[in-house]
Structure formats: structure tokens, C-alpha cells
Image 1 (cartoon, rainbow, N blue to C red):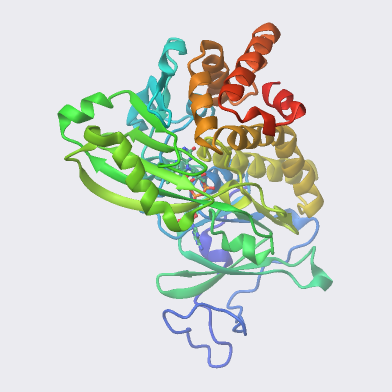
Image 2: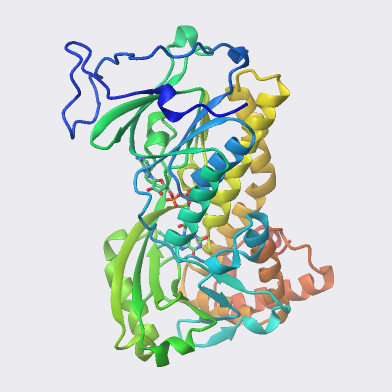
Length: 467
Ligand SMILES: Cc1cc2nc3c(=O)[nH]c(=O)nc-3n(C[C@H](O)[C@H](O)[C@H](O)COP(=O)(O)OP(=O)(O)OC[C@H]3O[C@@H](n4cnc5c(N)ncnc54)[C@H](O)[C@@H]3O)c2cc1C
């Protein structure tokens, strides 16, 4: 099933319906909506699709959208990927888990740094070094997002997806009377003109401020704000960070998260985040800078960036034939603030689910029930336990300086380090050794007792945390 040229399904430009004149340059269609003049008839959509390919619009070309578009295009779905800024760079630390390299065939030359030392600093500047429990070849790959995202988008294009440089503005659902047979109308602006694309399926991969999520009334979610400076260091200082990443915890750095120094090709990314105190983010950024101190003194700030990070999945992630993936769905883990892998994974999982259903039913329409069963349920079965576990860890260890001291003490333990790496690198809840687990539980309680915070935690929560 070959993909049709993009223009076949575009209505361009959107006209005012009366005189057929293009709308003014910056005018974005909003309520009351301008009438669409259909310059070409939409191909009829039926439950059987009349042997034409399924047509999908993916909004947002980050890791989630690019991976979804790739999976759809590979599966023969006619795919349009709408990205508002193909040459932009998402504010991000750019650390990815090792398993992502193989799973998503990320070429080695995209990696800026391979971190083999991870140092974590407690509020009183006690440190734990993570690197010693790494196995040969294990490392944390560090990438710049502009490099990773454009690679993933180009790959999706090379597999048949049509990349459109445009800003999605709104979504018009089919009328209730013919919900199964009519297309969604995806409205976007490109080259200064409003345009419309008709699609059977829409994937919202447009990040934490998702307009697609708003369009389907997906409900609110709590967000953290993350702030980061890219600082170019003189070569002698940069040498220190050749394969070293640092994490700092303490109420001076964040009331509920951690600060980081992540090495990139010719600079370090220094940042922090918070859910509780958005208004104080610059104060906390000053805090992390002060803690890193001389190591970044004299560096040149080459970029300052900030962006929200979702804190939990949205109340609604599928509605009709619209599905949310990545940050738009809320798939960032607590504790680590990790979202790149989960964005790419959820995009791919959703795209593959659509292809599976469409092919499995002989080329017919994919329904809300299909999306719920084949994408959402599978996602939740695989990852909801991990999200709950990391949420609990964040609440225990990031809530006070005592908890943070206890966490750094525990990080010094080889078994804790190995379990952490197993989970982070390979994205599986590490099974572990039950005897060592028991010893660790004792150690954890010991650290928390020392930190005088164990009394506020129920035994069941501790057990849940350890197993
Ligand atoms: C400062 C910071 C540091 C972070 N560090 C890490 C880290 O080290 N490791 C990690 O795993 N995660 C990290 N994260 C989280 C990670 O960045 C996100 O989880 C990840 O980018 C989610 O990918 P996504 O594709 O879902 O969304 P995004 O990467 O946000 O991509 C969304 C895309 O949609 C496009 N878009 C948005 N609106 C529209 C529109 N209306 N029309 C068209 N296109 C649109 C955007 O331009 C963007 O390209 C960090 C986040 C922040 C803010």
C-alpha cells in the first residue's frame, strides 16, 4: 500500500468560505470556526476503508511523534508528521538509557558523551559514586536533543512518513451522527497560511503543553518546571566531565527534585526542576550553580532553556480515534524525570498497535476500543507499577534534607547501585536477590531512622518500595 502524496489530502489554503479568499496571515482558526471550503473532496471513509490505506496525522515531531510516525509508515499507514519547529531544540538533559541505543537503532556517532561515572552529592556534600558497579561496556549515553530528534524525524521520513513544518492549531472531530465514517479535520498553520488535513487517526505527541490533549479534553496534570543552562567550559575544566555526570540534592537546589550537571560535546548542561515552587526556579538554579562552584567558574552560558515536565499520566489518554503519547500523555518518571525513552516507546507502541489492528481487521477502521485495548492497556500493564514505585521513592527521599542524606548513603551500597542500573539501563524492574533485598530493607530503614523520617512511613509502603 503505497503512501499518497501529501497534497492529496490537504485543503490548502483554508478559505473563508464566502469569497474563497485565504485567511489573513496570522489568523488562527478559532471559535467561531471558519467554514472549510473543500477544494478537493475527501475520500470517503468507511468502516472498511475501501482498500485505501489508513491515514494518520501525528502532531509533534519529538521522540514520541517521530517514533509513532515511523512505526505507522513502516506498517503501510499513510502518515503525516506535523512539527512546528524542525530545526529547534527541546530543552532537555539528553540522558537516555542504554537499551534505547539498540532498541531504537541509535547510531553511535549521535552520542556526545558516554558517562561511566555518576556522582551524587547529598545536602551536606557527602558523595556516592555510582560508576564502580558498572559492567564492561555499560554507560549512560548523553545526546543533544536537536541531534536525536532530527535523526528520528529523518528516519521516519525515509520510511515513508510525510513531514510537514507547521503548527497544529485545532482539531475538529467528526459529527456524532457519522463518527465512525467521517475523518477528523486537523487544522494547522504552515508557511503563514491556515491549512486542514483530514485523518482517520490522530496521535497527539506535542509535548507537555499539548494542544491535542486540550482538544480531546484529556484533563489536567501536575507539572514540574525544569530549567537548564548550557555552559561551555574551558577545555581543562571540560576534561573533568569527559565521562562524569553529577546530581545534587538539597533544599538549596530543589524542594522536591534534583539538580544536574550533564556533559555534552563541548559544554555541560546545568539545571534543576521543581513541582512545588515554580516561581523560585531561578533561585534554585542559583543554588545548583553555587553547589557546582569552581568546576563551572569562567564558563560561557551559550543557552538558557526551560520547559514543563508532566508529573503523571493524564486522566484521559484516548478519546475516539485520538491517542496521546509521550509527554502529551504524561509518561515521565518521577524521581529521575526521565521521559525520552518512554516517549519513543509509547509512540512506537501506539503506532504498532494501530498497524496491528488495521491489518488484523482486513484494512478497516481502528476504533477507540482498539486503541484502549492494544495501546493503553498494554502500556499500563508494562509500566504502571514502575511509575508507582518511582513516585514512592521520590516522596520518601526528596521530601526533606534528612531523606536526601539517607538516599545518598544508600546509593553508596553496591547492591543498590546494581539494582538501579539494571532498572534504568534495561527498563525492567530488577528482580534482585531476596536475601540481599532483605538486607537492603534493613539498611534502608536504618538510614531513614537515622534521618528521623521513618516514623512517617507505613510498613506496607516500605515493603512496596523494596519489592
Ligand atoms: C530541562 C529538561 C531536562 C530533561 N532531561 C531529560 C533527560 O536527561 N533524560 C530524559 O529521558 N528526559 C529528560 N527530560 C524529559 C524529556 O525532555 C521529555 O520527556 C521528552 O522530550 C518527551 O518527548 P515527547 O516527544 O513526548 O515531547 P517533546 O520532546 O516535548 O516533543 C514535542 C514536539 O511537539 C512539537 N509541538 C508542540 N506543539 C506543537 C504544535 N502545536 N504543532 C506542531 N508541533 C508541536 C514540539 O516542537 C516538539 O518537537 C527533560 C525535560 C526538561 C524540560
